[in-house]
Amino acid sequence: DTVIYVGHHLGEKKYVIDTVAVDANGHGVMRGNKDIHKGIYLVVMPSRNMNFFEFLMGPEGQRNFSIETDTVNFVKNMKIKGSPENVAFNNYQRHMMDLQAERYEIEKAIKNAGDDKDAKEAEYAKMRNLNERRVEYMTKVENENKGTLFGSIMRSMHEVEIPDFPRDENGIITDSTFQYKYYKKHYFDYIDFEEEGLVRTPIYEPKLNYFFEKMVVPSPDSMIVDAHRVIKMTYDEGMMKGDTLIYQYTLSHLLNYFEESKI
Image (cartoon, rainbow, N blue to C red; front, side, top):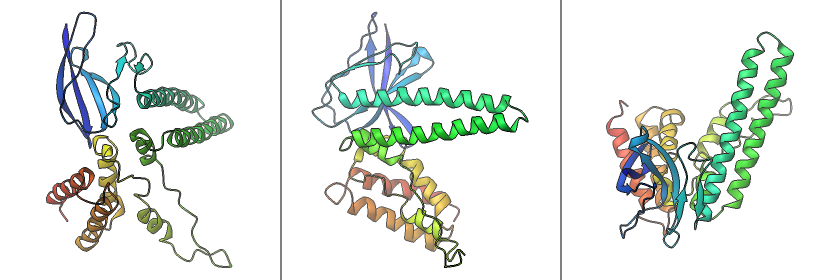
C-alpha cells in the first residue's frame, strides 16, 4: 500500500521515469508503450529511505520479465524470471558482494597486524590473490555475455594493459612518456560506441570526465584536439555510423563541460 519509483542512471545522475503503485502484498507492475531506452534502471523505495536496487533494460522483445526480492537484502534475495541478462547481472552483483566482504576482512586483518611485517605480508598476498580472482571473474563474465548490454558494461570496466617502457640495448628507457601516450591512445578501447545503453549507466560520464581532467594537457589547443577526437569516435564507431544517442550525449556533455571550464 505504497509506491515505488522506477528510474534510470544517466551519467552520474539518476532520473525517475515512472511511479508504480504497490499493493498490500508488495506487488507492482510497470507496463506501457513509452519509448524506453536500454540501460541500468532503478527501483527506488521512498518508504525505505530511498533505498534502491538495479536491473537491466535490454532491447525490445526482452522486456516482459519479473523481479521478486525483499528488503532484507535486495541483491541476495532476488529472483528473476524471463530475463537471462538480468540473471547474469544479479549473479555478478552477488559475487562482487562476496569479494567485497573478503576484502573487508583482509583490510581489517592488515590493520590488526600492527607492526608484524610477516603477518601483514601474508595478508597483502591474500589481497593480491583476491584482486587476481576479481579480474579473472570479470573477464569470464564479459566473455559469457558478449553481444548484450551487460557484456558491453563489463567490457567498459576493462582496464587498459600498459606495456613496459621501451629500452635500448643497455636497458635504459628511451621514451619516458611512452606509458602515458599509450594509455591515452587506448583509453577508450573498451567502450562499445555501438551500445547506446552505456549512456544510461554510471560508467560512461565519469570515464569522459576523467579523460579530460587527468589525461589531456590542460591547454585550449590540446583540449580542442582531444574533444574533436572523442566526438569523432562516437560518430564514426557508433551504431549505423552517425547521429546516435551516444554521439548526442557526448556532444552535449562536452559542451556543458567546457562551458564551465576555466581553461
